[in-house]
Image 1 (cartoon, one colour):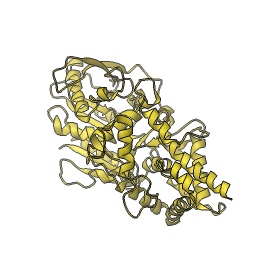
Image 2: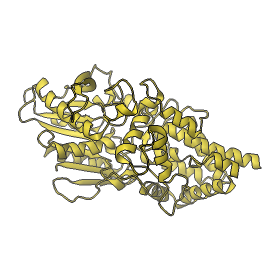
Image 3: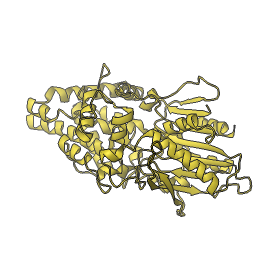
Length: 458
């Protein structure tokens, strides 16, 4: 019996290392992102949308160094006589992809308003490499301020290169962190950006994002109160049965497949996620709750293990290393061919250096264990980037958020200015309005897309 309990405990602990692979610190692994079958299945044979732009390394000091920034352009829907509408999809904490140049709701708006479509990849992500590696000294140039100025220089240059009209209207689009950039770009450069659609963008930078897991708990309750209770009980069972030895080895990890649960909740029914063989997008909060309330499985801890097994199968994984030390070793690699360079190291740096956004267990009551307080995250910052990164160191915009998305807690969800309306969509998740429409979409989501189109028209 003891062997069975310990095996179950470690299957759930291992799942969080898997969560580090699939979902960690608010972002999905790039390998999963690249398997966006929902988009790809409907995509036309891609044209060569790829271009390169000469960008400044440092916009704020006397530094003449430049680098090549990747962007995509599609002028298929562009009114080449008027040349007066341009859409800009802002890249964020992952690789940009040309799939977006023919897919997504923004393309439908592009057709409606005869816009030329641009997508600019964020510095230090994807193929946009400003420096030879990802050392801490080089990551100094990875800030939202530098990225915003990248956008301004890019827009000004595109106006000239594509001979756009003097009365050109640029509309910026972004989801999640790029949603923040879209709002800030309109605020900082109103002479260049006429309007923005800021989707699921956190605008309040706080180190200790305690409310995140409170929203996930509420999401579970909305599906099934018994599901919420089962997850809570499963967590308690793991805590109860952890031996001193096991607890010591697990001190750096929250002891349940929490990252997987985060990812499913944050992207619940968003019309995007899929993988080979098994559609990850079909694993929703309802799926989780079906497993967690299954009477055929007697204990809640075994139900958590069953959920973990499903996620491993969906992502074609057998097992993964759950060692904190190994994770840190991976994240300290600075070469562009390392797995950390796919976005994990860069985003971790941005959160440690600029934003925080750490999803902690500090809110009480807490159903997901108390093993990941703010110190859990600040210690990672120090372990990955050095002792400097310690606890002491760390108008015309449409704001769109979904009620299921935990990030709405850091965004604008109520209209306080008629020129910057907020659209809060019941029952939808992170960036849901940006993805291709489906006949299964909730009526509120369908209405929100229409509303956004009307605001763009203004």
